[in-house]
Length: 207
Image (cartoon, rainbow, N blue to C red; front, side, top):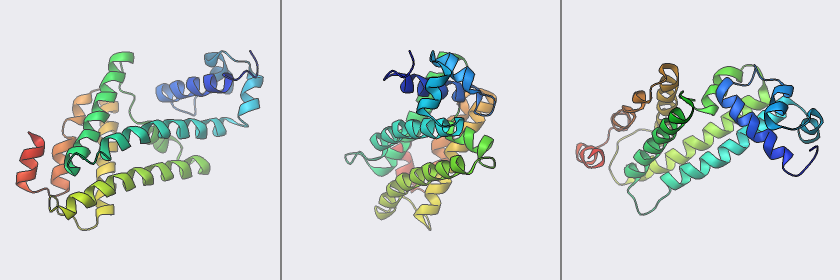
């Protein structure tokens, strides 16, 4: 099929699935091309290296996730804590669906690659940092709104947002480690405690 218009997307799709299942380091270009059903020459027509492909996979995955996070967090008709809880519920639902599909909890691609590659390849480390910074910024906006409404008490909203994202990543990591999404059930209560949410708001949002 060579350099047809859909070859690049097939390579990206195959790499995305393989990286989620097995990580980055163990994969070879030949294996990716075989899974994509394209000749090896097509790979180097679209990507100068495996690292360049990984960066493209990260960008594509983040574009999809960013849209999902925006739908959860930027609904102006819902209260800020309700929007934040929706993000956690959305994350848990996605991991549960993935487990039902393939039998394992895949975890977070960004977290997985951070653990695997952040000390090995600077371009990927820098891209992952940009993605996590963007996640923190999105959560920060919601926490700042809740702070203005007197629903939470935090010192620095940016630091609080970073802690929320870190907690989310950590619980997803445990869910992957134990192959059990029940590790995500404590996310919301832990988040409320972390943000020192008012008892009345905790009761209302948790109900």
